[in-house]
Length: 60
Image (cartoon, rainbow, N blue to C red; front, side, top):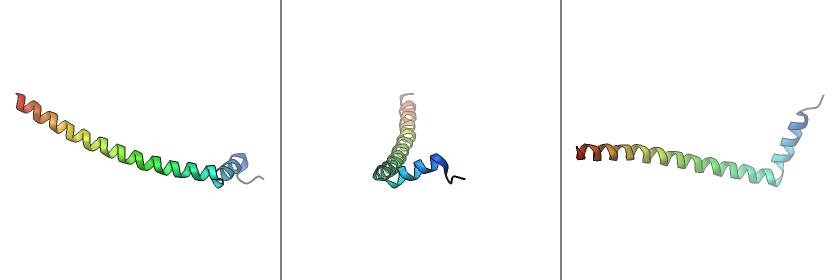
């Protein structure tokens, strides 16, 4: 019986080489950037909604 099969062998070779290290680093960097962007968009979105509500109330 083959342990890990073809896909397991491919993944172990892929993640153990330099290319795998680069991809892992880029994946972590992308995850951090996404967390920052999503947090910023949520913060700006809620603040923008409050500002528009205040402006709308002031106009009426």
